[in-house]
Amino acid sequence: MLAHKIELKKLNAEFESKKPQEIIAWALGEFSGHIAMTSSFGPESGVLLHMMSQVEPRTPVLFLETGYHFPETLAYRDQLVKLFGLKNVIDLRADAARKAKVVNDYAGVPYEKNPDLCCQINKVEPLDEVLKNYEAWMSGIRRNQTDFRKAVRIIEEYEGGIYKISPLANFTSRDAWWYLKEHQIPQHPLYEKGYLSIGCWPCTKPVQTGDDERSGRWAGMSKKECGIHTFKELKPKEEKEKEPPKDISANI
Ligand code: SF4
Image (cartoon, rainbow, N blue to C red; front, side, top):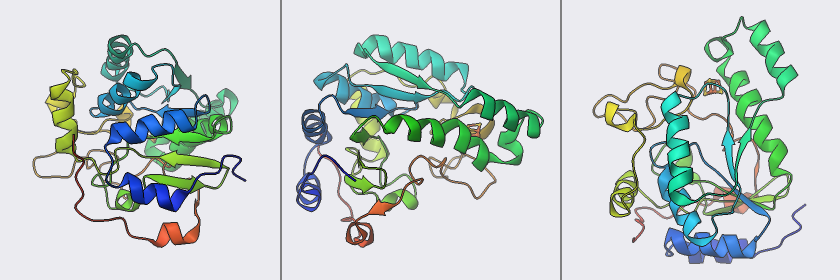
């Protein structure tokens, strides 16, 4: 049950023509003190983090510390925290006993034998647990990243009583690239080596020329999402069934 009521349909219609910065400013005001964002500190993470820091750098930034990140990601995270003056980055970790059992059951490599379970305990469950403390969650996913993400609405209502806000839904990877360049934001050090989307090291490879930007994630598997964007049911139904507008590019 959502404690905080908003006019979801009306806002979604309005936000389709708004800049991400306007959506972020609205969200941080509307849910002041009750909103968090997630960040993987990957190649495009600097965009949403920078936009948020311009409005309220004390916004909680939830980082899923799986224990399997590239050292370059952790160094990049420290760099952006300092650069943007982020005041509240929170590491989320798996329940220690549950993780120890899974690691033992799978002889130390659950990501090889059961990546869905590995993502479930290291990402989905820790995030699900902490989101109970908030009314809204802001994420940097974009519609042109994957087929699944094409259907994302700018504001969605989820089971569990929170809103999910995706201010960059209409952004393209080109928009993100230009935004980082325009604001002189450093890129993730592995980007130059062909890593266009970066998660945990066991499940991330460089992208081959011509392949889509997330093709290096769980390469060779049918798995495309870790589960944090799919673990709850969207509602109401009519919002879920509606197709998002096509060919909208953000104007920044
Ligand atoms: S991305 Fe790979 S290593 Fe990371 S939590 Fe998921 S399965 Fe495990």
